[in-house]
Length: 358
Image (cartoon, rainbow, N blue to C red; front, side, top):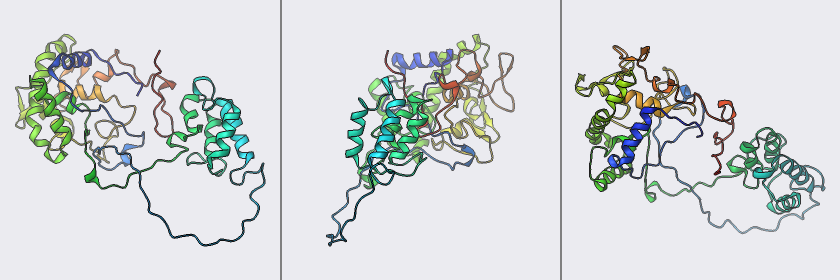
């Protein structure tokens, strides 16, 4: 994601981790979901991504069929014809040029098209492994070539292409990472363990485990927060931000974990008894109630872990009260995605392409 979320506190926290106090195990980083309306999304937990392919056995031997008649006339849109290939290749080579080019030239496109056996499809299709889908995306690529040229290309980039799913049993796969709330393994597991090898092993144990066993890591979460507050509370004070307390208790928990960020929702409930991303269909959509692409998740995560955001008695942050959105509102941050005016593409995978190397 191109949005660069940076605050002075985030830099301090990441610097602390980089100095060896929080060696990263096999945590893969943040994961995001498509920008759907999260108010209509059921409770979910992240599961490992797997690429699947299925093998089919031989079918029954085919008997003789009727004599084949003439195929569609070349130049029409029926089937795989030169007319559809001509329209497709003219569109994609006109819209997708330079770094976005999908073919070397028109002849290269025509050669691929003639040999590919991709169905023609129906005019105006926006998805599916057809030429008409590619023609549609070649058309809109005139305005957004970086986003749409891959969809108009040979593979279709999973929009005008196909994805194979493995039908193997779950037991055949090994999970190497999982994520509900962002940065839990990176910042909250093993941070208080000085030995690098032991800290990494603890992170891997968390990633390998199931959410049902997350209560066994509660001590890690508390220990990590003690380390973070010991390192950052003076910085928070100098920035006129009220830190939450790890010594005052609320409901039997340190105030940083016992404080409520929403009615009936404590900070502790975000990770225990299970580290999952929860959706309250009656609540306001937006992280941590679900997660949208534009949500400043790291800023919100740092705010609920470090600041006195308790909704019944919040601390003072600058000229106002501390809230989960306090850090996201600091002027050090970009307020939105840094390309396309903050808008995301409206087709899968909903991301802009990564920045190219200089």
